[in-house]
Amino acid sequence: MSGSKERYLEFCAGTYVPIQLQPWWLDAVCGAGRWSVALANDGGDRIVGALPYFLTRRLGLPVIQLPPFTAYSGPWLQYPDNPDFKKSSRYGFEHEVYTQLIGQLPRVAYFSQTFRPEVHNWLPFYWAGYRQTTRYTYLLPETDNLETLYEGLKNKLRTDLKTAARETEIVQEDDPDLLFRLNGQSFGRKGLRQPYRREAFNALHAALKERRQSVCFIARDCKTSAAHAALYLVFDTQQATLLLSGFDPDLGQRSRALHGLYWAAIRFCSERGLSLDFEGSMERGIERALRAFGGQMTPYFQVWKADNRLLEMGMLLLR
Image (tube, rainbow, N blue to C red):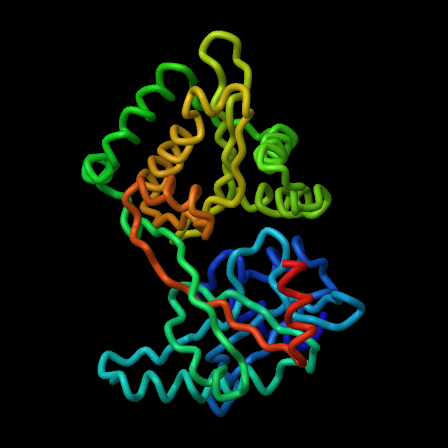
């Protein structure tokens, strides 16, 4: 293990770092030797910022891109513990740390990462020649009051949840095979190929199961026990995210089972005091479904840089 990874392990052990930036997550989805990390110091030995990255090849060229099953990457900072930390000081701190991190990134033909919603400042990346697109997800920052959350649902969604409760029973089952198959059926219904490798999902599932940081919900038919839909939730001590979901086109659409699973995930988060990130898609139909659950529409940055225009267009087509 490289020195920077060892120091990053120590950093993650001493401060909160979101689940998708954890070294064990990156080992699972990238492979232990296919990711690295840039680290920024406070002038001494204390780490104040980190930027893990997945280094791979596309079109025969070295690129940095999001790892499989990973919605967010990018920088994560440890701010000074100072109640008098002014905005100007905060921005100056971010600029200094980001400049250190950018300077340590390897030279690649193409760079693309989506930063976490907590990251509001990408200006040093702009100064370094990077560009940015704003994307959106839906967040439930607080899930403790289920009654209030239920009141915030769209009326039609409440009807769908009643249908799901009447048609299906939601259970927790560790059945990654079923989950992966239903997820593939959802893509197939749209004429798309499932964009994940089963081996990568198996590695991630094993790492999550070992740490007890995932749960699989399955909606089964009340009469036949046939699986209508499944949802895979991953979580740490602060936040949960919807990683994978899918439904049987012949059953799940009629029973609205997936909506029932979303509500089961919200209840799970409420019982544990977790916020929930729907990791919402920019697709119109999916966005409409997630919006109905009353989450906060939250922007996040996709930051990229390409050596030339033709390469950039090729990478966009492969995404």
